[in-house]
Image 1 (cartoon, helix red, strand yellow):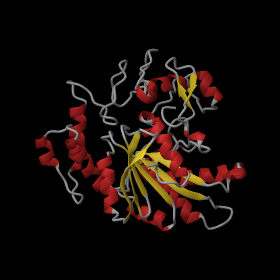
Image 2 (tube, one colour):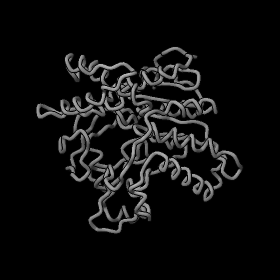
Image 3 (cartoon, one colour):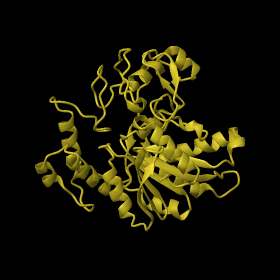
Image 4 (tube, helix red, strand yellow):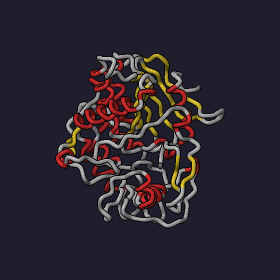
Length: 359
């Protein structure tokens, strides 16, 4: 409701408007809350909340897809794509890998064609080094901090950097949203990471391309309306229960440090892969993604070029490697369809059509 979905919530927190850049204009879209315990999703087994990890998440998502295709067999032979952002840089390849490993019979077959990953983590070392370089190159940390924390892709000193950047960006002298370092903050709640328990006023903030920094608050209000929860058949058993943007139900173990082996298996299987980066995100920045892709040592099939979202609008830049395409999205933060919805839709149309981004 704040990104690529068909509807946006209006500032009153009660009514909806159509999203003119929704991705369901070019494909049927299926949204899966994952892992169980996120949003309105739940498990009847309490221990599931204590055993969260990537393996279980991939397994559960795969089981869901198998059951979904069994219930709706008319979609079973359609071309199927998986898309995600941020930590889905692990979720998406892991689910794709699970599908490929289990596509060994007619009954279990899923017609997976490709994956799209936006501002997603790929490899801990290179991602971390890219965060340091991005913060310094965009004047978010001092030369002294950079000199003391600078790393090469074989180093790991970036952990200290992340704490330094967040503490400086959110200092009492002013706040910067690390997910989009140039975006305005919601005036009724100037918090870079939205506190979902806080309501907002009814004053809309109109920004270019339809971005409204207060929109998470509208969604929070809407999804905690009893009539909406009933219409969605949400499993709300406690009157004190509130939908939140992030869940505190789960205990999750983060064990993987790289997706490189899975990327190689996806490429070997012939999947089409699009990795894209909003270029004003400091959390999983474009520099880290470029370092990670470079570490895969892929040959280049089409050199770096500007791609267009409209006749005069440079949407970003792209390079086509043997096995995957990389694209930047100009002026987009961590959640690309939120900040640059028109450019995100152009990119998605091209990818699903099997075409390079328009030059």
